[in-house]
Length: 273
Image 1: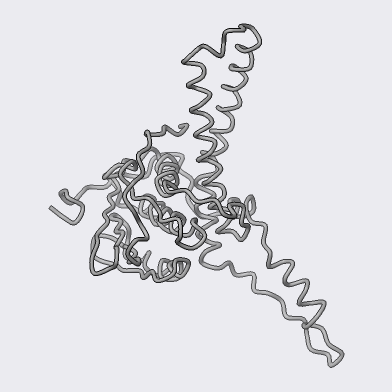
Image 2 (image 1 turned 120 degrees about the vertical axis):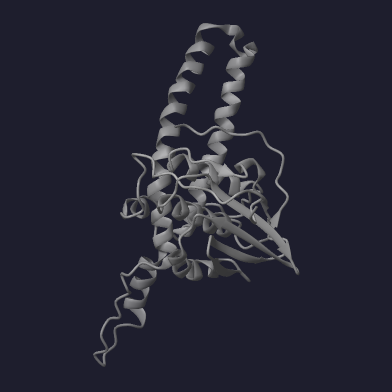
C-alpha cells in the first residue's frame, strides 16, 4: 500500500489522437495579452528620449504560466469545440420539438437533457475562464467555483483519451473561495495532471492524494516524471504560500491549510467524447 491507498500501479501508452502540448495554437486562441498595450505605453512615455536611449523591446520568450496555459489550451479546446457542436445539435432538436408539440415542456426526458446541457455549459465557461485568466485576460472577475478543480480534471482526462483517475474526480477536494483569484489552484493542478498523463510510461490510472499535516496540505500526483519539478517550481508562485515537492513516485504541491476543502456534493458529469 502506498500514499494513495493502493498498490503501485502500471502505466498505459498514450491514447491515439491525444494532442501533445507542443504548439502555440491554444495560446493564440485565448491570449489577449495586456503586455502589448503596456509596451506601447512604455514606448510613448519612457523608452524614447531625446538623448537617444533605445526602445526597450519586451522579451518574446513566454513565461512559465503562458507556456502552461498554451499546453492546457491545446489539449482542452478540441473537447470544448466538440461540446459546443453537440450542444448546438441537441438544442436544435429541442427547438424543433417545442415547435411541433405544445406539450413538449412536459416531456421530462427532454427537459432533463436541456438542464444537463445548461450545467455542462456552465462548467465549460468556467474552464475557458481559467485558461483565459492564465493567459492574462480575467474573464472570471469575482466568479468562484468550489468544484472548479473537478471540472478541469474531467476535461483533462477526456483529452488524455478517457484516462482513469484514482480516486475518481467526484472525490476531488473543493477549492477555497478566498484563495487568490479562484483559478490559480485548479489551473496549476490541472497542468500537473496533463503532464503526468502524457509522459510515458503510463499504463494505469492517474493517482492523486491529499494529506493534511501541521497546518499544511499536500496535493500529490503520481505518474509524473521527476523532471516536471523544474517548471512546477515556477508555476507554484501563482498560489500564495505554495511550494513544489518531488519524490520518487511523483510530484506535489504543499499548500497552506484550508486551501482545499471537502468536495461539494454534485452529480457526475459526462463530457463529450
